[in-house]
Image (cartoon, rainbow, N blue to C red; front, side):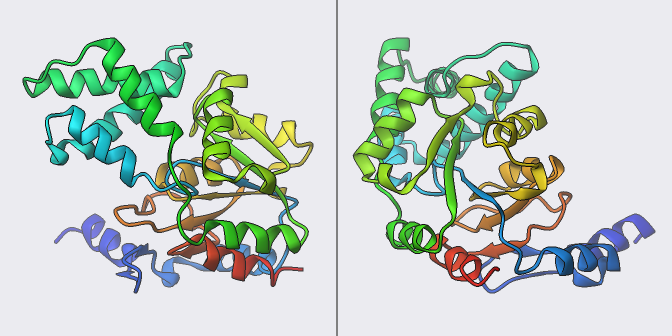
Length: 265
């Protein structure tokens, strides 16, 4: 076994009780010192990812699976294709609504598997599926807890302004948030660094005064690299990116995030 492989295994550490990959605390003192300086200090603004972090995607995946002829094994491929082409769009200096990118990805995955879906049908499936999602069971209690604790809370999503407005109305989440931010207004999808910088400027705070709460390793990685703090929610099937900086909080649901944050001074 070469040195690089030994070091990689050493640094990865072990799987936590929640199934979330936990970096080895022996990686060095730099990370520990960083955690000591920010532990218990309140972020000025909590930014929440929406899809999968706050909203349960189970019903959406069911509808997409039906559009793919019941091929539920293609759902992960569809979702990663959607994320891939949102990045391609931004990297190419373009912008398109996230739902439309999702519909295009659905057509691509379908075509590669001998399934024909028109553009109109694909857009109808994705838009309807995204806008009728319920909140995860613990979300409202956790948001209420954070609101009572005096936190400023902002949603921060790749979905369009109209899309997230309808999502929150459907899920009953509108009243919990001080503001809703959509990448539509900056024209760049997360996890581009410029998008997090824009979010901080929009709220009038410094990057280090922001905390992203998200259930996607790529989103948390982007926020951390942009100088933000982060809390990762290890929803089923989600992992932190091992090559990204360590997230301040790693737990299995939003209520556990809230329980930690309300102790901060």
